Length: 283
Image (cartoon, rainbow, N blue to C red):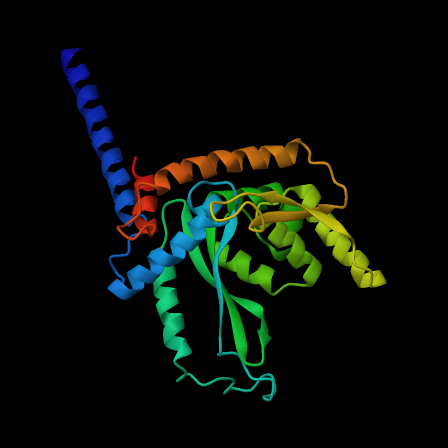
């Protein structure tokens, strides 16, 4: 009996050590920028700081929104309007903008944790040779959850809970307008009633040419109380328990972030975003 108890004790100890090793490895990989140059690391820190102070707080810092925009920009890499579609030489690979894209892609590839990954997504829209891009933070578990809950919608593209985020994001961006609106509504964490209102308002405007009047439900972020995490609702709409639940959860997350943020400022008052997020990864 004594030998059996010793065996059990040793087994539990080994399992505990293995679990601790796994946890340490996950922390080491959390927003690990060791592969980046000093210049790239500084840019990565700036991008994450902008995201945390805005709507990406609710994806990067805590799991409220399945995806959030971290940054948007445009580069002169698209096929000019003067060139026909389908040609091989649609743009010049020697443009300096491609080095910028390589830099952004290296940064995005490094910025990930067990829960969150970042992706660089090209917009469908181009204008006079400019292609628009978006850096998006994705909570992988929340993304899987919304696909599972709304399989009747996502299934039309063959998406399941296990689908890769990049495939879901790029397909969404290049889809027909109304499907794109509903997809982005789910992805950005808006409630069902707001998504349906926005889609049907767009459908009505397409049919009649008349803009459907609306109000907006505003959720505060660190940088502003309005205009960041916001969704459209019918004119005169009275918020329901669903809206209040999202708002209260966001308030709690924002309060936690505000306290932690004050501990991660450098001597010039700039947020050390990578350090803050790595602290959040610690067990």
